[in-house]
Amino acid sequence: MSPLLILAAADAGPIGQIAKTFGANVPALIANTISFVLVALVLKKWAIGPIQATLEDRRRTIALGLSNAAQAKSELAGAQQKSQELLVATGLQTTRIIEEARVAAAKLTEVEIQRAVTAAADIIAKAKQANEEELNRMRLELRKEVGRLVVAASIQVTGKMLTAEDRQRLAQETQQQFSA
Image 1 (cartoon, rainbow, N blue to C red):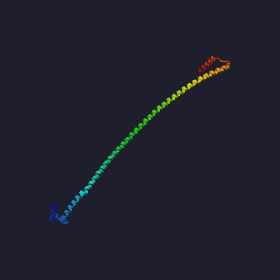
Image 2: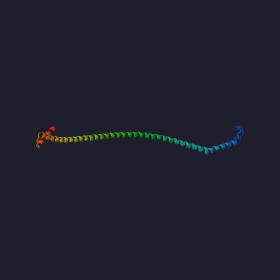
Image 3: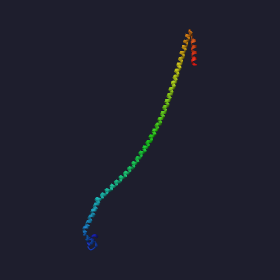
Image 4: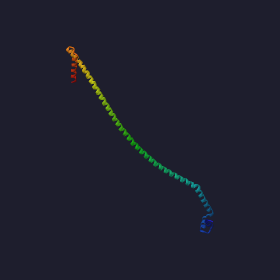
């Protein structure tokens, strides 16, 4: 027998006296204790155990979610840093390209200005040359015309016909006077 049954069976001890005073029924107490232990074991195995396992799974899931959130936050910070670096690099590259374009445009403008100046100088030189040729042609025509007019005036003044030698001499004298 178990020690509790022995104690319960003994009426003479102080425990027996206390049990009688409170009206304890030892066999019912033992049966209730066994029932309580069995119910506790059944609840632990089929109710509390699965609930604790579910709670532990939820804790792990929450911890994993928090870990993933922290990792995502750090990745987001890294991505933002990279995007900021790319923006800065792109801004610098854009500035460099714009500056290169300005330099190229200035060079091209300078080259075009030089071409325009050269073309203008050529046009002016050709115009001067054409002007001088026209002036020389007009002077030659003027000399011939003045010579003809001098001969005609001489014929009218003197009233005689000039010989070819006289005409040539008058024309040469007139041309020498215009040349000087």
